[in-house]
Image (cartoon, rainbow over all chains, first blue to last red; front, top):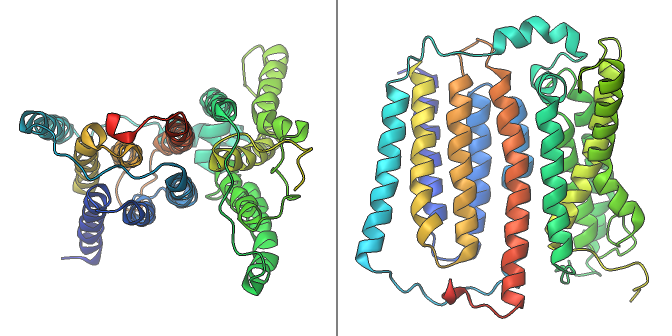
Length: 310
Length: 97
């Protein structure tokens, strides 16, 4: 047995075990911790499958940020009473549905001709020089299929607007203010996270990285400032600047789309010599918007207005 | 090719396992976690479809799709959690669900 096969078997077993342990764990705290661990191991699976961009996003967004969102929600949603078991017929039906879905998917996947499956990697490779970047995933996200990403930003903005409208954010649980460890940790960590975010943003053009990963890291810095209880830190008051930053990505994207539609006659078809600059401008706006969007999602509502100063 | 198939089947297994808590869990937070695991199963099938064997270039469009999916999943999770918190603040009990 080669080491790679061994790695595949171990990864598969760990992923399956973790997902089962997460979904059937006794307590919520355990469920959340196991879910974060599950995301970490899934990031390893992405690395194994040659998808380092996805691995970065999974680690930063799928595991860390989603975990933080669920941890934060535990305080505001009381745990339900001990599970009352449902009628056996319902449980049986749902279990049957689950087995049927697995059976159908497995049948479809096994009967697939894996040697002759279609793919776009050759097309992407052939047109890569025109895209302005050399990382094929960034080229797909921000050039070849930029329209998808434009709509994705619209989805993100709509979800954030809905959270914003649902009400004020409740008090965020904070670290003990006088603990000397806090400042010792925050002082090096926040600037470091900002540098890493900028680095990931720049790196996305030619290596794994990009706007979403950078935005997630930057939101990590903002979240640290939030739980440290620094009310003057960026993004913690309902100001026009915060609203504008959250909408910036979609607005910049729409501006580029309108400009290209007029000059090139096709929506989001960049002129090749300008492609790199346009992608960088869009990605910079994406990074900022994504970071502040995640901050609002974490708070679970709109932040308090500027006037309130306790 | 067996590597792709193996990981695609793993994705299908994750997806199928998360259906039961997604439909039946009484704790809404657990349902949201199950929805996330369900999504991860789909992502795994997609990336496995784009995997072309050791050393070969994988299909970057599947990676782009999955990246978009991860961001949409987290925004949906944030909205779902805010809705659950609001439901509770309005006096709903999780036992009614």
